[in-house]
Length: 368
Ligand SMILES: Nc1ncnc2c1ncn2[C@@H]1O[C@H](COP(=O)(O)OP(=O)(O)OP(=O)(O)O)[C@@H](O)[C@H]1O
Ligand SMILES: [Mg+2]
Image (cartoon, rainbow, N blue to C red; front, side, top):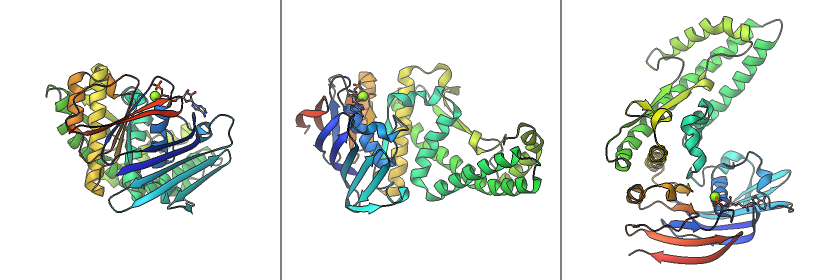
């Protein structure tokens, strides 16, 4: 998958801007701090998920003192070329595909698949379990419509069940109805999370040693509240039956996949406990590239890779390793405030200089 054109109108610090990108190229966005490099990455990510990775308030993306903003892109996928457009004003978000308005989130999301790695991702290991669930969910949502529907159904049931636990008098029959339905959803979610993590770790494990000279083995464990085996349904029923008195006491659901966690480790030690910054970056890079391979297996094409401020932090050896491991049919965007000099191993590399919301200079370099 490739973005060939990207246009902004009143987006962040851009007034009007237009970019062209090359098929399967590595695009380096250089420039001093606060010039608009990450804004470009944010726009691509936004077209992919209709959500920013920097803010939960989309209106902040509208240029100061303006009323609306627009992001527009031309995407080339395996099957076709298509145009995507988002127009956002304070009270309204309009979505367009092929120039035609689309009314639902699900008919827009999925046209562009992008995988992002930004400095905040390093918090994945140290942060709350909710961050690790979000990491896994974001990818599963892109991969499986069943997962998306089941997860949102579960979240609604959880809300309803918590309300029922708070009401007086307590309607136990109603609580049981919610519990039974939650168990049905959880059977699907647990199996999908389990299978996805297994696949992701197998792929990432085969990539990680290249970053670390084969010294360490990375792994991950899925922690949920029941054993994952052929007795899953029975275990779920028993777990809820046992915790009902606690649920009634605390007036909230104590158990469920909304508390799941995923523990990442190096040589059996949780990453959070002893990994260096460089090791954390390498684990994350392996995970992100592992994700790209999962997408390739499913779609027959690689997602777009967005590396915001991570490349220049790697040591020379790890940079070279990364470039060699990047699939040739993957379009890549790298932002950096530092000049990047490294061996590009015959990849097509294109340099852009971003200055105060404009593309100041555009140097195309082919490494042949
Ligand atoms: N809604 C907005 N309207 C106008 N300018 C904005 C808006 N939101 C952010 N900016 C400006 O965009 C700039 C930040 O852009 P961006 O985060 O892309 O910088 P960057 O080039 O990635 O910098 P760094 O190297 O520090 O990461 C800042 O100057 C900020 O004031
Ligand atoms: Mg930045």
